[in-house]
Image 1 (cartoon, rainbow, N blue to C red):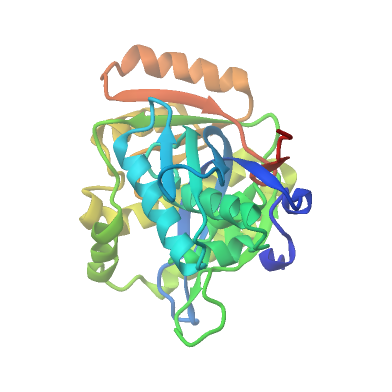
Image 2: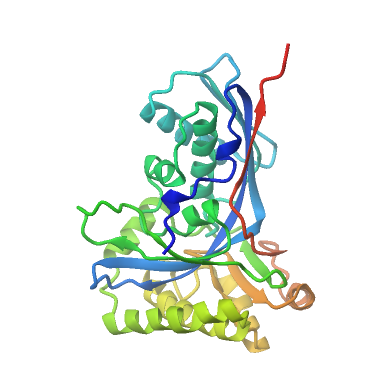
Amino acid sequence: MLNPELMPTKGCAETVMQISEISVCTTARLHMGFFDLNGGLGRKFGGIGLALDAPQLALIASTDNTSAPLLITALGDANASVVAKAKKIASQMMTQLKIKGHLHLHIEQHIAEHAGLGSGTQLALAIGSAISHLYHLNLSTLQIAQLASRGARSGIGIAAFNYGGVLIDGGRAVDSTTTSKLPPLLARYDFPDAWRVLLILDSSFPGIHGEEERTAFNHLPEFSANLAAHLCRHVLMQAMPALVEQDLTAFGHSIQELQMHVGDYFAPAQGGRYASPLVANVLQDLQHMGVACYGQSSWGPTGFAVFETDEAAQEHLQKLQSKFSDSALSWMVCGGRNHSAIIKSLPLKEA
């Protein structure tokens, strides 16, 4: 078993005593499904996911003395909501850590919010890592996640920031008195270099998040223990060996089991197996094409499909684009990211 606390975020050793800027680059993640929503063995949720190489979040942090203690700026494509969220995260962390210095965050790229791509966790971890480096705090990624109240149900986003690759976490302990407050990382595999992921994005349909997500979990019925056992078996005896052997057909079959049963379980909250009707139509078409691995990431609306080669991904993309022309739909072909978030520090420039 891997212990994330024993492996610092890439770049920690690069910290120098005098720093003017910290750059952090991380990326979106897919959450491909939970496998134990029953919790009868003392742990609940447990999930499998993947760090992508796009879309990216990139920011630069500095301690320049500005007119305000906390200044957030962004390039034009980052909307006011992203800036407001960054300001809230940074302010809360600075308060919790009792930091009274000046902080300037400049967001150069961002991941779409409420799309099922883990934007909130990546933003919080990126900001927390930048603060830790700027103020020489040596915080672990897990400590930052706890400060930012991330990882309530899934540890995939935290592990994606820390390691990259395909990730499997052990869920959260049902007993609130446990010392383990975040889902532990159980296994990590490289995503095959040749495989490609097609993202299907719907700009008209935000995924469930925040209070709506908490309410949904509170009102869903008890998940079958037998079904949880069935899904755990698919992950352990199908998905994990398939990743070692780079067998996309077997891996896809395991993911389809998770997508089918968990999607149907969430249907009362999200309106169907998939949240977005537009994305659902595309995924149904992919099923008819015989695509091995496809589904919805987290609460959606983003859908995904995995292909063995870039050529196969591009071929299917062309077919889909010719058939589905709704302006709310957009597409992206990307790969997996098999390394941690990239954190770089720059020494103070001489006057």
